[in-house]
Amino acid sequence: MDNTRLVEKIVELRKKHNAVILAHNYQLGEVQDIADFTGDSLGLSQKAAKTDAEIIVFCGVHFMAETAFILSPHKIVLLPDSNAGCPMADMITIEQLREEKRKHPGAAVVCYVNSTAEIKAESDICCTSSNAIKVIESINPSRDILFVPDQYLGHYAAGKTGRNIVLYPGFCPTHGRILSEDIRRLRGYYPNAIVMVHPECRPEVIETADQVLSTGGMLKYCRESENEDIIVGTEIGIIYRLKKENPSKRFIPVSEQAVCPDMKLITLEKILWSLEDLSPQIKVPEKICVKAKAAVDKMLEIV
Image (cartoon, rainbow, N blue to C red; front, side, top):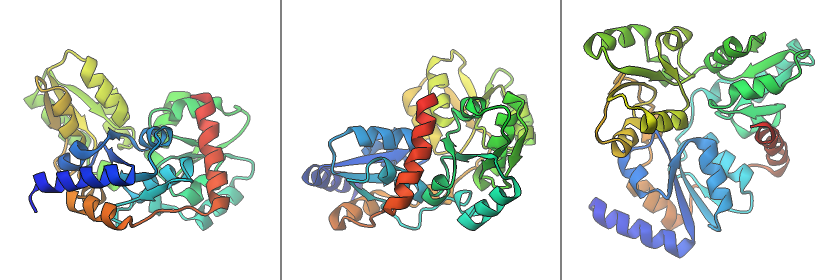
């Protein structure tokens, strides 16, 4: 079946099932094109919650579909490929978090949204890559802070806030492939380029950049910037959208190796199959759902 027919059948089933299709900024271009909304994980879940759609098709990874369910527990949430996970989210288990909490009694647990529902439920407050600094600043200065699971985002927030933060040693393998020497090399080829990187990058990469931005921040910055050459330090899937929205500008990836295999698992065929079978469905047990939502809601109260 060619892509034109695939798209037609997806549109037909989307209407039949009253479904909304969400695509993360790192998804394949063809997936971004079929989506009702494209963006970052939390923002997409919030948009879906505000629609009257009965079914959410989340083209992303497992923790993102969980977050969509947490915010819309009355809706069916589909993840077109159940194998689409997140290595960083999998780097901390509930037992490991509880052990860290025993080591640091009384510490406020700040949990990056790129984590499982179980980890969110065991945390005091969530954060995103765009609001981590505000979340840290909202915590009483007398309290210690335990940041999970991304040590690099936590390190960045610690540097910006001056807070002493205990960092769990998790990281994003994709952003870990982005190296400062690659940035320095590219600056030689594109001397007038602006370098923007994601805060999941290594500290030495962040120090080399001109801008440190979430995916949403990158999209906004590129729309508003007059610079024609922009070096991009994040998963390369976002470049498809950047080029689409800014056709007159040139976007250069820091590394062609910055590819998340899990983000590329979902295809048009899998979206179609998911809508045909209404599976795989992602659900979160009610007890975990309630506690996880409390951590998300606490974040939303302050940002």
